[in-house]
Length: 178
Image (cartoon, rainbow, N blue to C red; front, top):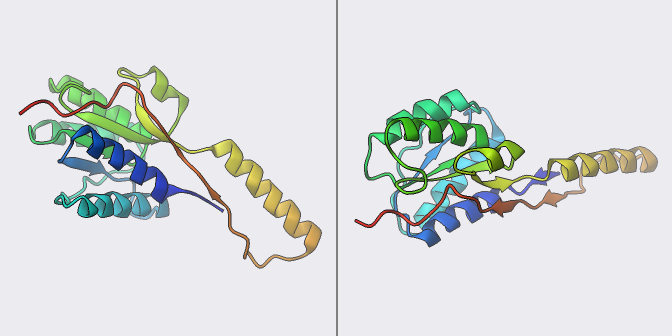
């Protein structure tokens, strides 16, 4: 059972491309996380499919502090107009750093997170994010375990992909006019 990481990232990057962004940076999660690796690879694939260069992603972890450090770095580059963050905490730290460096979100830089944590709705600006359905994931997991116990079959052959949902809020807009 898996969350549709690929579909969620694709929606986020296509949203930014649809707004007109052509320099979309990525702040990664930890290098030993399968979710982080999938998100990074999908972001890069989406940019290549759009005929855009793939910039070197900014390494991070899952923390707001890593997002803040990445934001301080990216704020210094006026060519950066959009950032896809591997999770919401990274995005919130990045937004704070952008604000402190005088870069307006979304006026100068659009930001998208991933997870869909409720706190994103109350950030300033409210965070555009890819929502994972953690409750459904838990229900499906329990259902699979109960099914395996009842049937005695534990081969792991049954696969469930749980869709994600792009939640559009106030942290994305078209890039500033050149």
